[in-house]
Image (tube, rainbow, N blue to C red; front, side, top):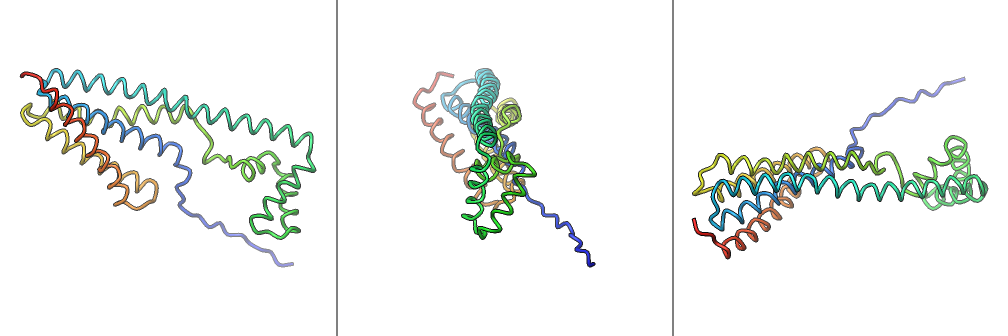
Length: 235
């Protein structure tokens, strides 16, 4: 009897990173854009270095806490919805196992399997892990996409604080007379680097990623600079 040897083919997929990558990129981008834009607006109003530093620190702390709370609440809502659907599906598997098996079979038929093969696949997956099969193929819930509230909150807060610290450090080191130019320039450079890192981590194209983050950074800083100029403070 001949034996079939199955050789594992390893592929470097990155979809498992999507949960923390989204939160980290969003947090860092928001930290840079919001803090730098706020500092540029205050600098355009001729504020001194002490005012800029206090404003930057307050923006960093408030923004990091806001990002953490917002991510935790929103992702926890997603997790609650997923858990409620899983509980409902588990109850249906107990009450109506035959109907659930037919439902799974029809899903595989719709995806291109013959009815006979779909019935075999559905039966084997149901025997192996019925709830897991329905969660994945009926509800679209998998480990790669399942909600992780604490992970998202910590990633967002840490990345926001890191992003916000960059323009804040520039304010502390740059000459007061040209601080607005330094903050805007270094922040746009940081956003471009963030776009590169996000693209490489996610395996996507670099240039579109860089363009997206820098465009909105320029727009935000230009808007706050215009507002700051309208409320120019005496030096």
